[in-house]
Length: 278
Image (cartoon, rainbow, N blue to C red; front, side, top):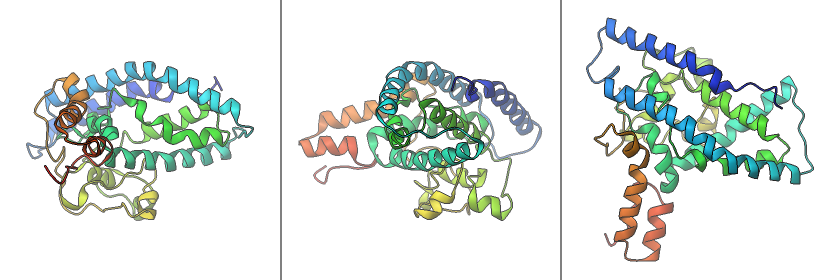
């Protein structure tokens, strides 16, 4: 499995070049002030992206060890062919959907994922704004390991999924032909996912395929102009604060809790949950 390329590492130059091209395009074409690029915001997104690469090296040690132990324990094996790789990529995307959806509705998971939604801008640099606590997703893919998918193949599929999602973080692409919009995740669908208003909240969780959202009733089409960011935005570009602010908020809420039920609720209920007595 060592022959599988490091997709993310090889894609970094393209990420940076395409981000620069988009940045220049906003400079030379008129656009509303609240859209496009902001120097501090972009710098924060890039810092979060490079930081996530470093922290992921740390989190991968226990994750790879666990995956390897589970893979050795299962008698199932799925060989890698062109068609099985496509099937495994679709399967990974299915479990990505549930991981992503869970990271929006379980607060301790949201504390990690909120980093990606913390920008009030939506551009290619936003795709690089990744959490430093990326250890929260691995458990969702255990069924794939137990089904006989080699950990290296799972990592390859996950990387392809992440690389695919880079190009959908843009306002420069409108709606695509209907068959594409119906099956695949597109910039239009992902703009809705990053929006923080009304019916757009917690919608369109798909990675490569938007079909899962249509199947599980979490799809919302883009109709009105999106307003990006959080329902309660943070007012800092400090990368450390961006990475940890929701964990700090959880700790503050736990310290104010008056019961174990409230404590558990602040950890496992939705991000906006409050005890009835508060």
